[in-house]
Image 1: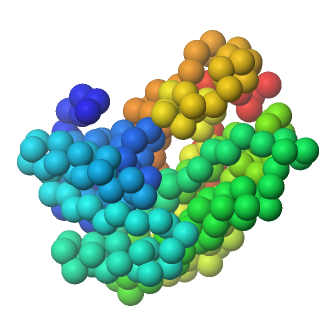
Image 2: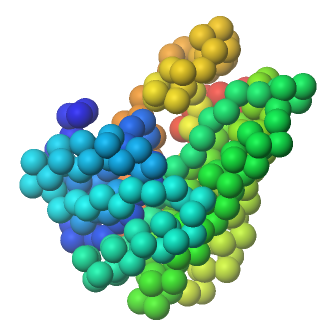
Image 3: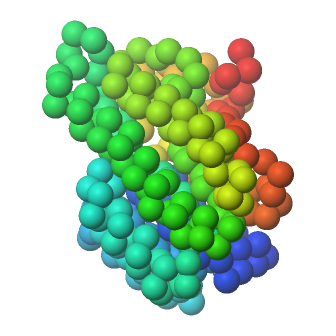
Length: 255
């Protein structure tokens, strides 16, 4: 487990649900939120890896529960949100991070791959927002952070399914920000560039090298750097920010 940042209590006593928390950006966010005092419900499809993360965080004294399941499954999403409400008295923060990163161009994409990508990255994110927002609206406060991507802003080779699926993340952020603002709920997103996660490491090495070279800072990003941005958007420090998609991309989109 990555070393946690020193605790400042920025999320002390706040109930947070984080999806896709077994590795990568989700795990780094869970570690950072735990260090900041959040009460956590963590989700992932990989129950074994999720349990390992939960055990490691619990060993540090964090209050954390596991809710394994697929975010594309409506019943699984409802279960995790109900768990947070019952265990922690409500939901203050949702980090809708779970996603898949398939590599496919137009000639190789299949209907099954397209549908699976949209089910997880699109329907899954919508379901998480829907069922987390309900208890937030009931209490008149809450913050949601979605994981989008630079692929929702610019075209990239080999991402004919992934890129459009991340347009959904950015689109939900904008539309739900307008809908939920009068009800006391903020929603923002991060748009990471190339980040050193297991999913990225599994991609074509040549493609990764090309992408990294296009980042003006000249290196791949760290999950902890994205987690820091998520923490800011989820915290009260961002109380007048909603509907924003924040690039965490080493300057990629500035070109």
